[in-house]
Length: 183
Length: 183
DNA sequence: TCATTCGCTCAACGGGCGTTGACTCAACGA
DNA sequence: TCGTTGAGTCAACGCCCGTTGAGCGAATGA
Image 1 (tube, helix red, strand yellow):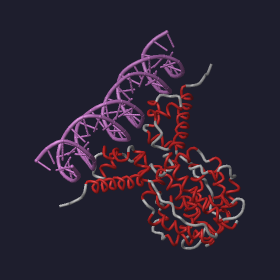
Image 2 (spheres, protein in one colour; image 1 turned 45 degrees about the vertical axis):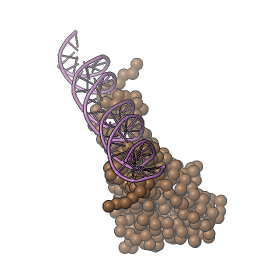
Image 3 (cartoon, helix red, strand yellow; image 1 turned 90 degrees about the horizontal axis):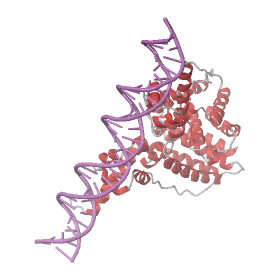
Image 4 (tube, chains in turn red, orange, brown, purple; image 1 turned 180 degrees about the vertical axis):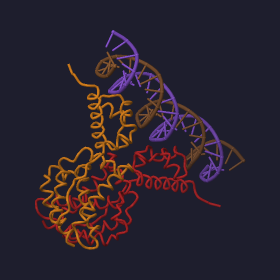
């Protein structure tokens, strides 16, 4: 017999809804994901989703909450390794939350804004490690490069990038980023 | 007094609808673009759009028809310049048709398939110019790099890439692609 | 024990969507 | 000139969506 307090049950239900939402948003994007589908995946009534998250947009906002890596700025070389490392994470185990954000970034204004904010912070961080008057531009290019690889691999699922280890990709991309950090 | 044959008027109307559709698909993506909005932009009744293109999907299919560049395979260096040149086109004057395709590629299955096909052909083309057993992988990375830059610039409209000339971007990206072609 | 809280469901609403079939009327061909 | 064609419109259908308010019933606490 399950002996769970009311608040504990509620917390679990809330989490179950949120995880179902993350999965569906990551897979189909904002527009193609319906409250009804989320509710069904969470084995719950659609009205409950509304009650907990207010609106579909509220649910999406809760689903894409993403923690920023701390990452103190250092020299260019360490920064490159750090960026490549985050790719390693991106290629293997990018969180459903981040995938949900990326999946909708081209068609949902709020998702686009979130991505711009995240990328903006990464550009700042990389830019601090670079010198030269076009440091920001080069930082932006490095960031979009990583974005492109992540999109091609995780979202478009290009055949050529399937079954490739993150290390292999990092090895090939390293000289590429170095060239960009030294120009 | 306008003296236009019936077939000529029809042709123009059809074009007007198609161009309105391209613009809206490029701007908002497949799901957020409604037949009604296209019809209004083309100053036409929604039913006429259906009559000409059969369905919303048919309209989208007609809107994203894109011609492939001929581009004979050559040495790595020429290939890099060619890729960077296509970026020049991408940064400045990427066709509404291509933008429509890219805008929806993460959320609309048919658009994703089109993009995969286009990128696949580009990967083939680049791969032929490279040597080594991981030529295809490196070609895929070069392609996703260009995709990332195009997405960041054209679709996400990152501040850092705004007001940057295609030549400047090409100059910074060139050593980057060279590094990838020589590894 | 019993009134109260509250997690959760049920049924419905209003609206926008893609899509359809009947209709209008100007251009056309004989 | 006159019947026919066909470009374009109009009104509506049916569906699915996000969202809402009333209600149920088990856990809660005095």
